[in-house]
Length: 452
Image (tube, rainbow, N blue to C red; front, side, top):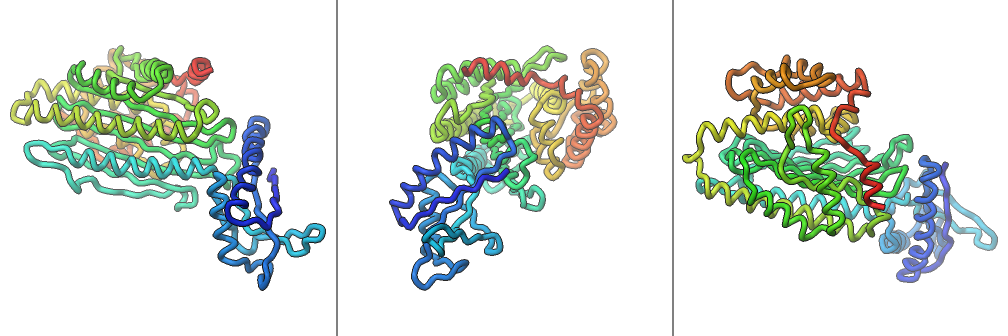
């Protein structure tokens, strides 16, 4: 169903903007209310005005477009101009020459602004990571940019900055994506914009870190943010844990921080290994526009993201300075390899986000599995298969062991291996989607009950 609403106006400038603001607000509210009853509803707003002297239908002036674009932006709408073949002439009463100037979909300005925020935060992340120094060397200019498109760009795409196997990084990936499905009402979302980051330093004393910040416009409920920051040390470091948590706690509302920490502790637990992935977990599952004003939640996401990378890079630099390369032992590296193997297991067997990404598309498989460390311990995986892993995970682990290169020491997880692992995981779940029930505890009902 498409509901077309026409605003007939010969206003200009601020008056047009005020008129649009007054008009668009109840339309957007009605749309959101209707979505709970009929998720397939698509609401569109057309702005019409009388023809001016010298104009002909279908040949509106540039000035009229400038006014409509400016007014719509001020009203919180993003305007998408339709091709001439789809524009219509609307005749009503005495206004015999009234026609549509713009037929914009009600794309939230919050989507556009969230895209801008996360895009700028990605650049900040890369800058902070490239500034890290080890033995007098930095990674300036070392992060390689790679872009990808969803359906050839029709439905968005993304870009990632990656680096691997340098004196500072085992592997690091800073991923930005923005997908949209405004033209596909059967999709459960109309858009999703995300920044996902995973850093695995080479030095065992420098902790790994993962974070994820995304803004999703759902067709069944209000738009929401998801915010995740977790610190993952290979070696015990309570000071770094406290430093990381304090930075996030100082920014986040207390009740939201407490709920996010509880949710994160549940989500990142690995039952079969009786351990957590990481020591500090903040997982804000859904921060709805109904709970917090979009401008406020967007600012919170931006502040948390910046605090995450700023605090994290400070911790890493402290560890690099305190534990230079020549002081590292084989024991330290063995502990890191064991932890990276547990990280590998959690991502591929339990992480709901990774699985969802692989099942949704195959256009960025290596990027989706960029969170995997460069090296793992295959012998340790085999021992877990014999002693710890329960059905149905044993089926998937056997298939993975058949893919992973045989190695007496550290096993290299190359990009080619990641691509094979992605196909294996995808096929495993496509065979039987009930297997997703064995993944991490993503209890959104619990979250909703806490946020009432």
